[in-house]
Image: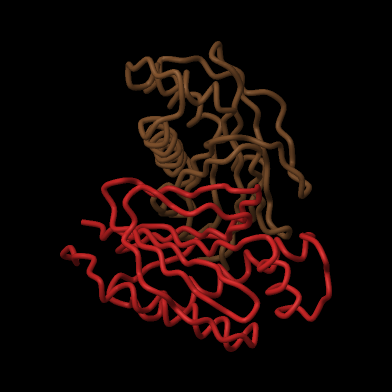
Length: 158
Length: 158
């Protein structure tokens, strides 16, 4: 397989997948904001679902939420009414990352990618940093339950 | 491919790989402590290198360090003398996670796994949680520069 250069077009499957996942699975309209190409810095968040990509392209996808948004999104997703972060919140955020990466995979058929299991990072103001030589971007999303962001790092494999 | 059950024996390639990586790449003896099967809880750490696994088995591998240990290990790894966390620390911890997962891959040939790119999580007292239905374990390591831990979640794919 010859190497396919990662281009801005490869961002679309992730953005579309996030919109679809929130619409179909959570019942929430997630409006994408302006794409930010990562330059080493990242916003701070409280809860992140993260999942690895490998195959014809390698990388990592994460969905990061402020605590309050994570709780509200989880409540809507699973039909609960928690006032705090629980095991359900952790499971829900991991599952959302998993679905987003799974949908995006279909839109990136040329890379024949596979995805790992998700992990969920908790901790106030944690940051997730990608290798510096890799194409990385963040898309902020707004919903009626608060904002979150999608971060992707992606590199095609020779 | 028929499903291979994940067994305790599959832990060994990760432990061996961590020992070899620290010995060969950092010049540091890392002594493994008692394996802990994860039950939802995890220790808090400051800097973690995390990398996804997919293919015939799916999961996530992370190496988590207290801040002081991460700085000292990085200084020894790259021949520096930083007193604080810098971009070099982030790069070094990501690279160590990458090497550990890459070595472990060879010892898990039956699963034909591939690895993602590493990401590095920073933030005091963050936690990394795996899906609850997956075999997850932690191995604490001691070195003369301080302790760290290896965490792995792994699930064979049908």
